[in-house]
Amino acid sequence: MFDLTGRTALVTGGGRGVGAAIAATLAARGAAVAVNDLIAHRAESTAAALRTHGGRAVAVPFDITDGDAVDAGVADAVAALGRPIDILVNNAGPPAGMTTTPFREMTPTEWQPFVDINLYGSLHCIRSVIDPMVAAGHGRILQISSGAARTGIAFGVSLYGASKSGIEGFIRHLSQELAPTGVTANVLALGLLSNAVPEGTPDGAVTALTASIPVGRLGQPDDVAAAALYLVSDEASWMTGQTISLNGGSTTN
Image (cartoon, rainbow, N blue to C red; front, side, top):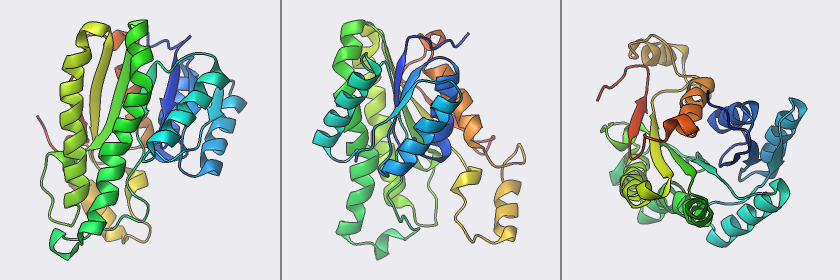
């Protein structure tokens, strides 16, 4: 099961953390992987690690908020790997230097990066790969999102949550447009992850966060990668238009 031999994946934000774990898991299951990151050396490092372990991978650094750069990067990936993208994992984000700031303390200029990355960035990537997927009669679009898209949180992530809500809504509509074509579109909404705890967070705060999760631990990038593998596999052909919460039981649907 979950054999991706012959498939080609593009993982945005694949230079570290969740993106790198997803890229590694897809490569281990046989997919050729184009590793995107805004920072070139991060993309190169992940791609090199995949090749060291026997995978087929190339680095395609580009800024997902720049539509022309996305198109050029996708073209580079297709040329290097020899076939169109079958699998898109939109994982890039949040904006560099994101801080927790109450809405009343933000300026309109500070709103923009969240919308540019989490909404427009994902749209650019989807637009760049979707037509070949439809033509082939097969494709997988997986949007990585956050529980903040549907659960109000009081510590200053309103624009992050709003932008994630926007892309989740888009994916639901897109899934219906694409359903007859063999292309699926789903969302993984993530809870608290070990790699997302800000550096310098007091141990007591980490302990409190962990205690709030029913399974008793923070999520790991490999937890996300395992769920992603299913959603981009052939076995998930009847799963589309869904937002799946992956959060250790912190919220239930």
